[in-house]
Length: 302
Ligand code: CUA
Image 1 (cartoon, protein in one colour):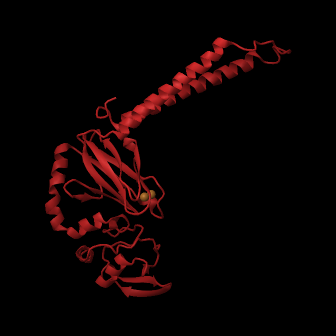
Image 2 (cartoon, protein in one colour):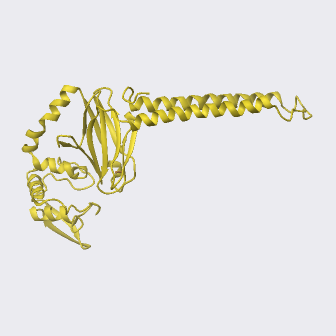
Image 3 (cartoon, helix red, strand yellow):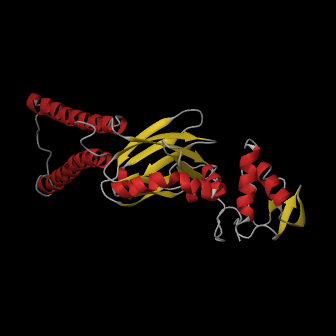
């Protein structure tokens, strides 16, 4: 099969149905034969054991050769399906997928970043998958693709969204407290709408660089900007808020200001907000300007 001619969904579904179909026929055949033998060779009909042939060459060859051929066809179609999943069509759009505890970030060839995987419908998308911390797994059930994000290496997968729509993305490798919330979507748009979205990049980035940074570093995976609760406290209205924190095991209250926010990004476990687990990784490697930009943006979230 030409890998660019069929989609990952078609490749996987065909093998699945093929193996499932054969298994179903075998199950029904074996069960029916069993029931038939139980009735036919019932003790009431045959009080004495019947003599039976010791061997039958033709039968033995048949029950060895036929299942071997069937299993080999399963292997063959399985291999074809596997190569379809691994061989990326040459015209694919490359998107970098960054996994971290507990969010996904997608980076496009023009450096645009997004927390939704926005793609043009009908076009092949190649995903270069990396992890910033632990094992994660990029899983899109609708396209039958699942690939681990492994720290220290780049893995890949590809898919083609058949038509515009929204498709679930999950993390399929247990990665800690908020693993089940490490979800997002593939947003497949008609080609021209995608082009529009893709080109918007510069204007938007200038408008809210802080927001882009929060997406890029995955902050909004755990901290909402609209007041809704997530794994961590919301960033909306954070400045000036009185917060109760545990510092070195001692509870104290403080008023959130720029120093507090900055410290919480660099050393998240120094002051842990009451009611939330101490699970945030330290972001002490971020450049000073980025931190300033982010703090400024958070300050503006009223
Ligand atoms: Cu990331 Cu589970």
